[in-house]
Length: 459
Image 1: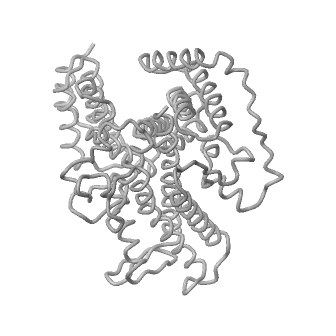
Image 2: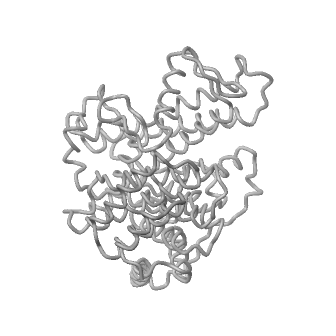
Image 3: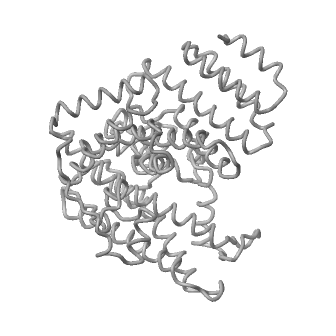
């Protein structure tokens, strides 16, 4: 069996780029097995030093994937030394998330072994779920399961997520039972496929735990009938396909009563209720405008109504984030002056990142509130301390918004470059709007889940 020193010697003699990167991957795995943090950090250093020299997308995928693994290993090593698993700021997770997203981005450009792609998507789901973002996590796991249902880590993690969700966030009782039952089934099936031994043991304990609470769970009848033909419309099908209804079930299955907005939660006063209803209404308008813009054929790009619908959809969807911050400020009694509430800054003392998190959020174990904080990290904000967004396109989307709101902006058949006018292709603009709608939907639902979680925590 090769030792860490053997692998380092192999690195010095490796001539092919791919062989060099794969050897570092082996080195990192062995370092984690031996719990050698110095060697894990050495692996990170070697990959980060090598990355600028990498020429092919295939090898960039490998570099970013192994960097993500190394940062996750570093997080796992230090976890037992930290005061709490509920630290909201976790540098290792930020690095792992950025590298997995870059690995996914480069993977799109190449023909690569599918198993690596499934690992990337599964790990993205795992990280996002741990941060309190179950909606994109479920989306990643569903992609894996649709390609290969026997990919046990994705199926079992999805099951565990649904069970936690069922216990802790979904307000509707029928939806809770649906999440618990489906999560149990996925977990039971997932552990029948090849899974890492430590994870398999944890999943088996979760199965036993839910069976001890609900011994008859396998006999539950969930009356959700798939009967889309009665509701079938082009708009409904489009919302289903793009997972845009404000309904927890649609993240899991396209049952007929997942085909409308069912974002309901009991808030403590009428002002909050009315404002949440306003946000939901605005989201529905943004969604409808975008649907019209992609479903109706246009004759030209010049002063076209469909283009205006796209712009309105983009603007409304982006505005929802600060409105969610406004809700958080009042519901969680942060007492930030209304004129200063902002989705990027409300988390910090005196609204300044260098002063650290507000005491209300430090080690707060409301997972879905923490998820909102991590959603804010995916958006670019042009203020000192906030410029390092965790999504590769965040800065470009912020620039796009600025041009739509204040400057010259056009949509053309292809993208173009100009200092005066921001020009974007239809396909690229549609892609960005759809992602923005998904994030604003996630923010609305995460706020609702955080309210339900807070109610449960009070019991």
